[in-house]
Image 1 (cartoon, rainbow, N blue to C red):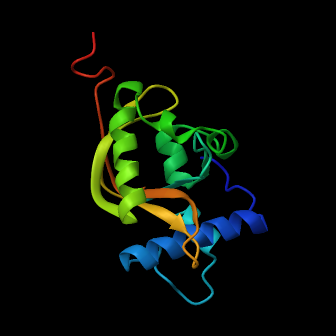
Image 2: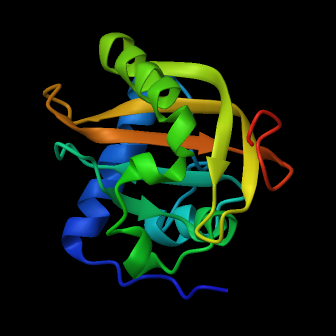
Length: 162
């Protein structure tokens, strides 16, 4: 298991934006609010995948929780240097980008499903995924995030691959 990354003030602020945006856009919580909740630790240990990328021209992940890192087979330091487009197979990146465009237009999408790939090439289908814009309270966009609880392992090669 990957150790929890260091919770710098900047990292905590970005994660607060991820949570706040999700709640404002969907009316739901990523983790159940409790008194004295350490949001950083609760998100890290959440029983759902939570990832987020920034607004760079080729957006780079800035967060992945413990479950995400396990599924994508990365350490936190490497994951947070990865352009998020590499989480999808090359032939599916255009479909992924179309969904992200929908998010930019509408704030979020629910019930997305698609194929993703781990660092070792292991393929899996994510299901019932929510993708949303990470916005501050003034509406400034800081990236996009996704969460899902269901995934299904897939064969090594795509059925239509040669």
